[in-house]
Length: 88
Image (cartoon, rainbow, N blue to C red; front, side):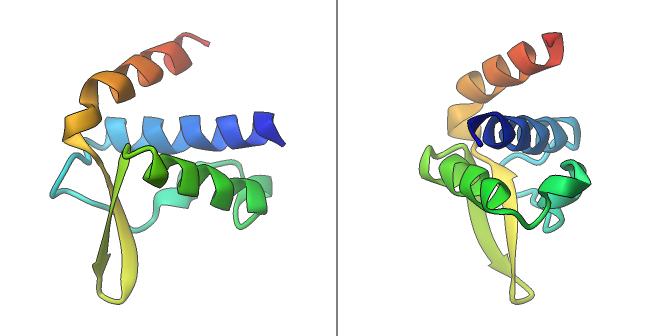
């Protein structure tokens, strides 16, 4: 389970960094970049919850849906994590 949670976190952060979704720029289709077998699972929900609780993701309610962006105040931590994940 922890491996799947880490995989989902890495996919979400990677997607948002590549799309340059920081602060006011946000997206609703955050889980579309993760492996199909993990979409909608408790691991995916757990990973998303952990990213929000850690302050890495900002949640905005737009058009009655949740939209996510990366927290610019945590940019150093996020980019370090992203760099480590892209080496693997």
